[in-house]
Image 1 (tube, helix red, strand yellow):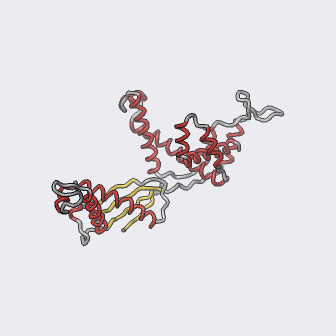
Image 2 (cartoon, helix red, strand yellow):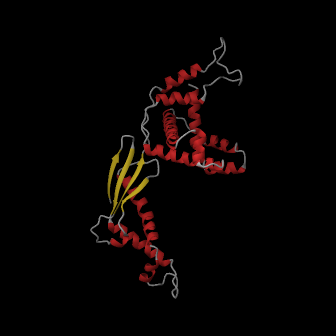
Length: 292
């Protein structure tokens, strides 16, 4: 395998990977053999028909697809290991050089197939003077009554700043470059969710855009800004939690699961304990900031 790596300024990583022709041919033969064993032709028992006869009947596109499914993940993982990377998302893959399987042989002079994989590692986060800036927001939100602790009369408890104010103070303090591929992935997810919601309303995209006075470009731009802030906030909270040794114990996870509104929700939470732990840790970190 030959691999080359390039890192963009925003942190996006591009791997260019070449799969040797002998590996392509070897995998093709394995795929074809597997298909032969599961193919039945008139007059022959399953897997017993002559190889040449079966190969003529096999779907060439299906063979190629199976070869790709076997080779791309394997060589991507090998390239990641070779370059000592720690990717945080699934790669975006594009096959650049794709010779027909029928033209390749183990002794072929061709270098084989070449593909690129875009991915990224966790961005570097500079927290800056986040504590000082959050403390300023906290101080502004308090009602000072002589001789008493800051108090929220409506709620009957000590007042805390709104989460939105705390988040903005943190984001204004943080300095980091979010990889575009990470932003694009989140935007695509959000846009897909938006389209589903629009369909449920009985509208198509053009009707939705007309009703909101927006264009596809402006909608995507809005989602890009939101995605960048959300990702930045998530990584900042994670770094603060690590720095301040904020953890979630098993008891807290169990308590959250027990508060589920029904059995189905309880089962879902039980099946996603890792995700639930992450959400609880984020909430505890946000509470930590609001208490500064």
